[in-house]
Image (cartoon, rainbow, N blue to C red; front, side, top):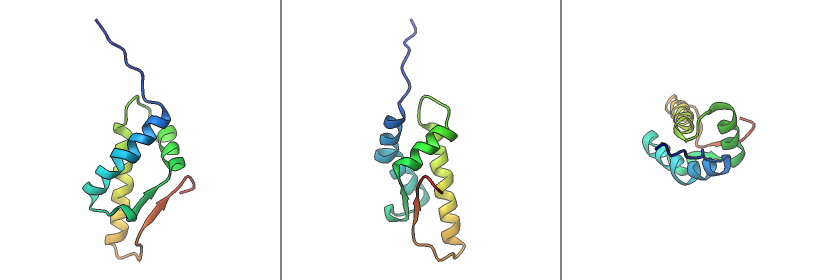
Length: 89
C-alpha cells in the first residue's frame, strides 16, 4: 500500500526555516543569530524560485550557501557585522 503525503505549503516551509533550519545553519557556519537575519519575504522568494521539492532539503542547502557567503565576507576582513536578507537582496 502506498501512502501519499502532501507537500509542505510555503507558509509551513517558512515556519520550519525560522524555527529550525536557520538555527542549524547558524550553528554549522559559526554565526551568531544577530549576524544572519532573513525575513519572511526573502524566505518565500527562495522557496518559490530556488526550491522545487515537497520538503525543505533544498531550502536548507540554499540557506547553507547564504551562510557560507556571509562567513566568507566576514573572514575576508570586510567590515561587516551583520547581514539582513530581505526580498530585495
